[in-house]
Amino acid sequence: MSEPHIKTISFISRKAPHSQGLAKACLDMVLSNAVFEQNINFIFMGDGVYQLKDQQAPKLIDNKDLSAAFSALPLYDVHNIYVEADALPKRYMTAEDLVVEAKSISNEQIAQLLADSDVVYAL
Amino acid sequence: MNISIVVYSAPYSSQASWSAYRFTREALAQGQQIGRVFFYYDGVHASNALSTPPQDEFDLVAAWRELINEHGIDSISCVSSALKRGILNAQEAQRYEKECANLDPSSELSGLAQLVDASLNSDRVISFGA
Image (cartoon, rainbow over all chains, first blue to last red; front, side):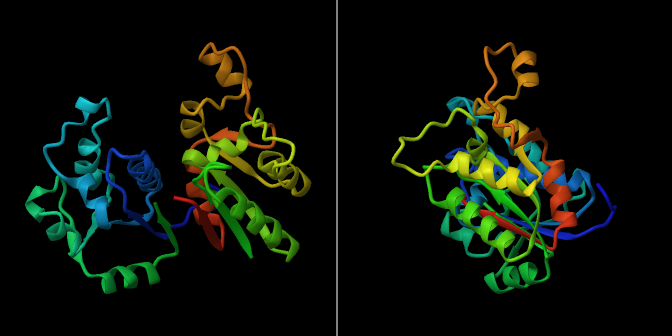
């Protein structure tokens, strides 16, 4: 780090957890930025909300379980965790199905978060 | 303006790595600075020196290499993404007892901290693919 400073960095994660590696790729980016104490927004949209679903058994398909990492996000000081408001009910899910507390926000609110961010990553 | 580039997709699987290359080349032509190119996820395939496309197709790995070398761009291939996709430098090949190394010398292997650093020290971060 050439200069220690803090930016607001938003991550939009839109993929289901075990179809590709993008969910883990995004999680790894978030954790790296958290280690450097950046101001992070972690936003789950569309199928991305499946990443937060409880009671998964990915070992059955030889995949790594990411749930422990998601539930530990607050320990990394990642507190601004959001889900797209429409995404949960469309998938017959509620906030109680999630492994970590996430605020449900509208697309307008997501747009505002992105407008207020210094850097946005979407994957 | 200081711009960093992130590439998530592999050459030849989608347009993204080619678009990233063309964007980087054009930004430099317009006098912008490229702070860092960071190959992440499938993007690391752009740093595979063994990539050998047919002669009548555009050699994107060679094009990236020439652009990076010509402008002295700081180019990083994410080490965890690269290793699991079989892209190793000599040091990693030795460490994991593999027979050969194939990381293109125009890029270095390093971790996500380099992407955090790029986010903090660039005016813009432009992502391609995913």
